[in-house]
Amino acid sequence: MRLPLPALAVVASGMLACWSSGDRDRSGSGSGGRGPTQPPVGTVTTCSGGEAPLPALADLPTVAALPDPFASLDGTRITSADQWACRRVEIAAQAAAYELGDKPAKPASVTGAFDAGKLTVTASDGATTISFDATVTLPTTGMAPYPAMIGIGGVSIGSTQLAAMGVAIINFPNDTVAQQADGTSRGKGLFYDLHGANHSAGAMMAWAWGVSRLIDAIEQTPAARAQIDPARLGVTGCSRNGKGALIVGAFDDRIVLTIPQESGSGGSASWRVSDAQLASNTVVQTLSEITGENVWFRKSFSQFGFAAAQLPFDHHMIEGLVAPRALLVIENTSQVWLGNLSTYNNSMAAHTIWEALGIPDTMGVSQIGDHNHCIWNGSQQAEVTAYVQKFLIGGGTASTSVLKTDGGYAFDKSTWAPWDVPVL
Image (cartoon, rainbow, N blue to C red):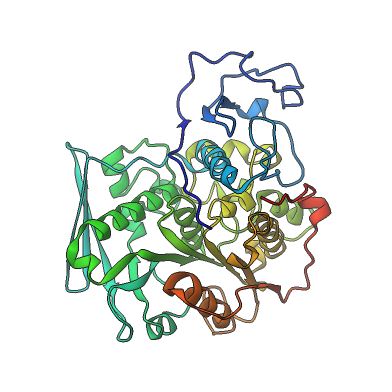
């Protein structure tokens, strides 16, 4: 089942002159049911076709549990699979407006050149031109054009095994597109050279834009297309780059398989569950900490540092943006800082989306803590191989029904996901 993602109908910057408190009932919101107190940060077209504002923080309600992914902003719950496409638009709009920043459209010109294992991507808006190189390693088995795994800063899920399956590896230079050294990196990198240093996109959304241009270049360049099949592209990354891999997969439907590895907070962990872990004296990375560490998010996201429960979404819904395409969450129980309990509960909550769509074996969770951070020892190779063969290469028959942890965790659905799971 493949559902198209319509173009985002979002106005995610500036104040809306036409907005008024009569536009939408915000009873039960952070303003105490009195109606909005501040102009919204944007609008989005809802599943019923109307326009809904994206409220400012002061007007967002506090929701202790993970927000219901099946509840549209028009106040109804979706009831069919085709409505998931419009629900994704709503969630993507919220994620961009509150956390990630806007993803610009394809610029006026995108070209590619492929030679000697290097794909050069050039993008121009007419006034400014940028270029970056992605290295391409072709397998020695299989037949061109090959399926390919795009590595955000590299691949840490068994590159030798991928090559043996006939999968090419494309190394996306994310630090060149948007820097992530520390908090001083904001607005630095090729993305910002083209779109301006004050663009709302944090580094992860800038990387997502860059990967989309990489895919454009593959599609448009005969020499690249002869070696790489643009219809069989996956994305992965580990740690901070795993966060980015999730965002890349969430915001480009041309990615057929997304494998974030040990991505933790800002990736496969939930802001709410991580806060609960910290409150119970388990030291994990939380929203308030991570926004001061680096520039992965839009600048305004820091206002939610101690108000994560007011976010109208959480990362179960970011993972859900990948649906109905394939997602395999690779996590490491021993890396407590990443939010081990948080990543498990968040990803299990996300799995209900694939359950609702009738394709539960298209999303998997594997959490094993027998290795150091981002060190691949092969203990999760079987699930990676199964997902790659079935969803990236095509034709795989091994089971992809993978929901496991060696941490002894149970999915606390009553606390974190108390909503009903519909049959879509």
